[in-house]
Length: 458
Image 1 (spheres, helix red, strand yellow):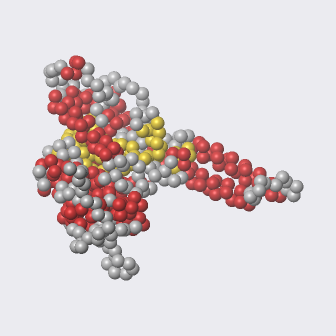
Image 2 (cartoon, helix red, strand yellow; image 1 turned 180 degrees about the vertical axis):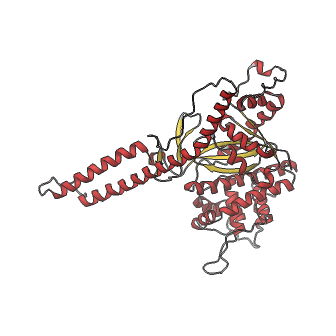
Image 3 (tube, helix red, strand yellow; image 1 turned 180 degrees about the horizontal axis):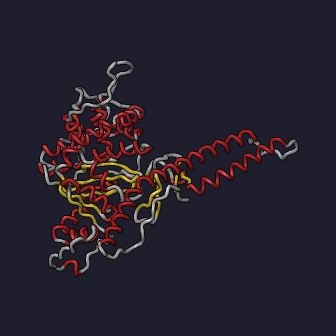
């Protein structure tokens, strides 16, 4: 009996129009995203109400299209435009229409408020579905470096900018003197003295702007660090008054003078050179922050900062949680990069959540003695400092059990975003653009996660 094959007929036209919903399976993420967006009561979508110009693409369709593409690893507007022709699920979401990349990019930039609103609405939907519980939420906070849409080779340091300014001034003077000399040696073919002077003056102006911005940043940094410095000094003075021995170096007062290595990037001035990985290399990046609910692994707060470390990020990250949900938070978990006595006090003030933050760096490896049962530690002496209080909190059995959740929740979420979704670089420039895009990434992750939880539940 001869082999039999399925008949492949690419030439016969379809006699009846196809049902677009049959293009993808019933449990596909595209259906979930479409149904979720259609059910959200969005109120701030940008629409041309006058009806002038060309016909608009429906904003809900555009929102679902962008979210789905981000959830599946397609981030650039040109790649999304191509996907409306080549990807069946994307073609289904777009209703077999094809928004061009300019339209897609404009929609993404103009609807930052909608993305923030959708982020909160999706979390409320998760609570209605009982996939995110009400009350007694435990959050794990962390940050990850995400590449900016700029090269670190487009950056200049404060010291280097100063040297370049002096060099360019000297070269401009030399070119002006050369122009006045009748018998001067001519320049190479294609080069003129006026053009070379203009090029150097243009570069000189940009370097002066870079120095000015770096100096302004240094002044703002000093103003922000001054209250922290004063609090540390007050704490040390109080301990001396109690007769306690104060260890460690005296804190240095903040200075408004830039350091020689302070950087400015000409492509994306808001981004910074930051240590990445294990601190073995540097990248032009932003510090993307997230707070993840430990049970559902949904992101409940997303923000972006240009700070190279997490030392001052605990308070703003907790405050980024929407107000109704923030009242339900009972515990916040963070690694030692977030810890400062001042930040912990602010978060816990007025009945706020309890913070469990490591006060020193510890490895992930557990020795044999760490596996053995041990008695509850004795409380620290009366009047002990905040570091001793936090260390005791983490050594209790309840504290150890809670803190272990941090590594199991927020770090895998970053792994999914960077590996499974493939998001490693911002497409938009400026801190505002990066914040908008990070909200979109976290929104796409949450819908992807809810779809997964729903499929497993079924």
